[in-house]
Amino acid sequence: MQTSLAEFIRNTPEGREAEAILRKCVHCGFCTATCPTYQVLGDDLDSPRGRIYLMKRALEGAPVTDKTRLHLDRCLTCRACETTCPSGVSYGRLVDIGRGVVESKTRRGPLERARRRLMAWGLPRTRLFGFFFHLGQWMRPLLPATLKTKLLKTRSSGAWPAPRHARKMLVLAGCVQPALAPSINAAAARVLDRAGISLIEADGAGCCGGIRFHLNYQEEGRDDMRALIDAWWPAVASGQVEAIVMTASGCGVTVKEYGHLLAQDPAYRDKAARISAMTRDLCEIITPEMIGPSRDRGTLAFQSPCTLQHGQQLRGRVEALLAKAGYTLAPVNDAHLCCGSAGTYSLLQPQISAELRGRKLGALQAGRPDIIATANIGCLTHLQGGTATPVRHWIELLDVHPK
Ligand code: SF4
Ligand code: SF4
Image 1 (cartoon, rainbow, N blue to C red):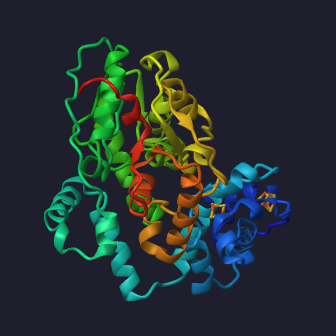
Image 2: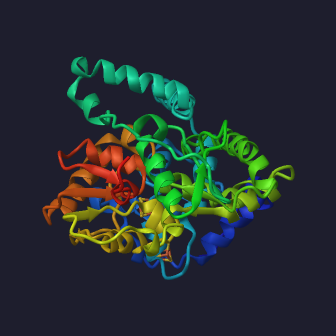
C-alpha cells in the first residue's frame, strides 16, 4: 500500500514503524473473514482492512473524528487478523500507534473520560481492587444481577510450597488475578514444585501495564512496565531465576513485548529486552512428563484466549497437556474467535462483548463438556458470568494432588 505520512509523525520511530506495517498491507481483505467485530457488525470500517484504512488516513494527516475513534475503540485487539494475514501485517502494533494518534486528535465526552480514567486508576491497584472485590462478595445478595455475574465466587487457593528447589522461576501475580482467583498461581506453584521448580512472586510486582496501555494511557502503561521491571530486576540480575512465568496469557503477551514497547527508553530498553526474552507462558514450561498419571477425567472444552493463540502464537500446547492428563477434549467451532472479554472491552463495549460471549459459549458448550478451561483470568471471569458450567484455568485441572 502506498503511504505518505504527515509531517507530525513521518520521522519518528512510531511513524517509521507504522509506515513499514502499512506498506505490507495489500488490501486483499482475507483478514475480514476472521474478524469478530466484522462478523457481528458487518461494517467494513469495523474490519481490520477498514481500520487500517482509517489509521492510514489519520497518519497521513486527514481529519480525524469521533467516528474514526469509535471504529478503533470497537477493535478487540484480538489479533486474529494477524494470524490470517498472508502478508504478515503487524496489526497489533499498528493499532497501538493509530489509537495513540487518534486519541490525541479527538476529545471524548466528560462521562467517558471519567469512566476510562477510573478504570485506569483503579484496576491496576491490586490491593484496592481486592478490597472492592471482597466488599462485593460480602454484599453479593444485595447486588443487581448484572454485577453479580461479573463477580467470581472465591475459592480457596490452598498452600503455596516453600521455595526448596535450586531451580527457581518468577511468576507474575498480576493486578486483578490475586483477588479473583488466587488458586491459579498457587496451583502453578504446586505443579512446578512437584517437578522440581520453585515458583516465587516478587514483592511489589503488580500490573504488567497492559490495562493502562490499552486504555490508551500509553505512557502511564509504560510507567507500570518500568515499575514491574524494577520489582523483578534484583532476582533477574542476580541470576536467581531462570525464567519469568505468566499464568495469564493477557499479561504474557504484554510482557513479551516490553523490549519493543520500551525500545526508545535508554534507561530501560536493555532490561526490558532481557525480561521479554526470559518470559514464558506457563504452557511453555509445563511438559507432558510433569503431569501425573492419565485417567479418565471427563469431557472438557478449551477456550484458547486470543492473547495465547494469536498474540503469542501458542496453539495446541494446553490442549495436548489436558489430553495427556486424561480429559476428552470436545471440539469447539470457530475456536479462533474472541470471547469478547479483551481486557476492559467487556466494560467499554458491553453489547458487542455480550454477543461474542453468547456465540463463544454456544460453541464451547455444543459438546456438552463437564468443564470449560481457559488460560487467562479475563476470559475466565467473562465466560463464567454467562454460564453455570464451571470455568477454570487449565493449571487448576492439572493440580490434582491433595492440597
Ligand atoms: S491486513 Fe493482511 S489480510 Fe488484511 S487486507 Fe491487509 S494484507 Fe490483506
Ligand atoms: S484485532 Fe481482532 S477485532 Fe481488531 S481488527 Fe483484528 S480481528 Fe478485528
